[in-house]
Length: 212
Length: 156
Image 1: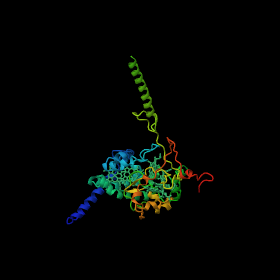
Image 2 (image 1 turned 60 degrees about the horizontal axis):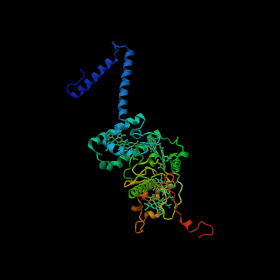
Image 3 (image 1 turned 60 degrees about the vertical axis):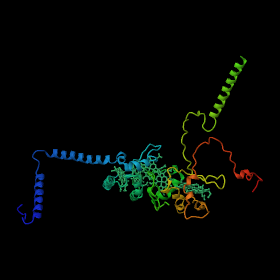
Image 4 (image 1 turned 30 degrees about the vertical axis):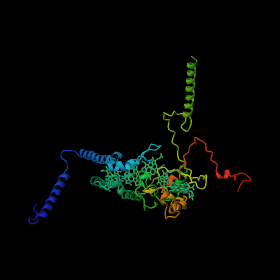
């Protein structure tokens, strides 16, 4: 306090903050007189687990089909369409749920995606796509985002389940094995270049490369 | 007495006759042995033929059948999945035959720049084939056989 200049309230505020930090540091630095070091380390460890776990649990909850279809925008449009496709029910009984294709399994990518997705909550509140018509009007824009994302990460989500390495082209249909050998195995193209609209109906495809 | 018994005989004969008639009409046709008032079990779904081998057309004007699966292919106002392979500009990559020039013609025989609206819905003419045993045989005879072109000494 002694250094504070009474003529400048701004500086005195800063100085007070500095003092507080110094005092806090002093307290934290002093060895505990009540708990042993081992106890403190253990408590910190447990607290860490709880916070980390809680954070991850919150992430997991938001990572389910149930959560995604909680919003009618998602349920009435994209989810309804997904139900008729091979990714919803198939002979193998493996279902791809929304996060399988839309949220990267890599943890850091996951966080990045969550931060980005906060805009969906605004979209929900302001009703940007709250009717089928509005959804159809916006659909191309939303699809373009998804295509760009999958193109940029070399169809990472698809490859979490399908991998080019484990494809047995002798068991594939002739068109598939030719296309995969010519363009996929050579790295010229990625899944989403050729497999658009496998999970939902397509937006207006005029002008999209490869379409008429 | 005679009248009464003859009426009885007639009734019995009628009942027997109509019974067998009914039974016959009920069991015939494509629906199999299931009685008319009951719904039979649905036949199992069969996979689409997906060999990619061209099938011989039965007559020159026939829209060729599709030799590959078209499951999940979208054809509507937003897009036409078929054209992502069969359009002129796409055939280099897809190695698919281009839609023939007749597909660019409007009803007056004018050639348009792209596929004519009346040819947009491909599956109204082209159909895929499923792997099934046909329930009835087909006695279609193509023109070559009909005019004896396939027989030695037949027409040229």
